[in-house]
Image (cartoon, rainbow, N blue to C red; front, side, top):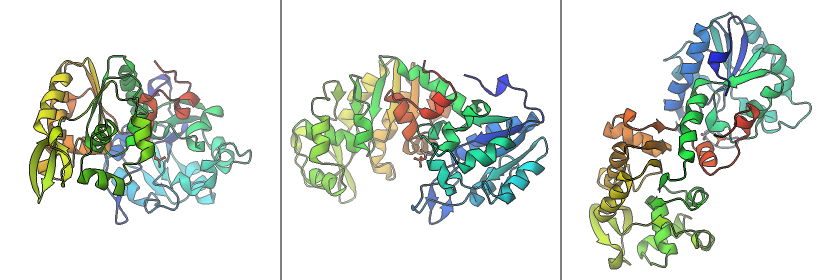
Length: 382
Ligand code: 3PG
């Protein structure tokens, strides 16, 4: 993998694709680890006296989180000096790109405002036509978008000398270690289809809504929770069908904590069906999973075991996270909920080998799928 260490950037014009896509609450962009991380590569390039143009996206067209990058620019400026330019391929952008001096950086507006971002195959693609002549190098520092076949991810390496940024480099190096056969997967959270992709003979500890679905797929009626999962569109015949026949190596919860008028009460599986909502795994499951975690040579944990927003029901997630933190082997944590819980619990982040900032891209990688963005850079899977 070619990295920032392999190129002399002094005075060179660099197009840097980064990922600062962040959560949005009532129109306000929240500070994120991604913004903080993105500043690392920018800082290094500025120190090396490159002329840096940052390209990034926020949200999805037609959704509420589809915003310009003015707020991101303010947040990014807490870590590194970057000027925001409210344009991507127009005259204003070109003019600003041409004015940059060595050691300066600008952030262009949301690249998804340009429809050609979604049409890399278009022979008249305006992003390629306008931006390619302005640069000497292209850097992809957006591992978390590298599962997308989009112009800013896959097209520029065809025309410009390219390399990986520090965030992408760090993710790829960490993920190579998860490929090992004996890695134990702890799969929780509310996205069953994502987890099903990963059920390929690996040893799995199921928890969260996913764990409940696995229990139901094994033929158990959980009572109220069956109805709740249907209402939330998590439980369907289609999902149960997909799960059947894939559960041989999947450990499922042996007890659950339910929410009984705001109180945490635990019941073993045999005591179900029960008329209360399940909000966490129970102590017996925690004990059983903790033992298995202790012996694992490598671990990938994705998604919470229960409702982490409520302290009473974050017990399962906390216990598993702490057990993983004490594991001697390689440990990878994926997904926003878990990194937030680690932050809240003040568990030392260094206790994990790697905490990924990627969602869909990480999942595709772990599921063994090709990532177009990595392929475009010529990065081969280890
Ligand atoms: C993410 O948030 O996972 C990345 O920024 C990719 O965003 P997308 O799912 O909108 O392509």
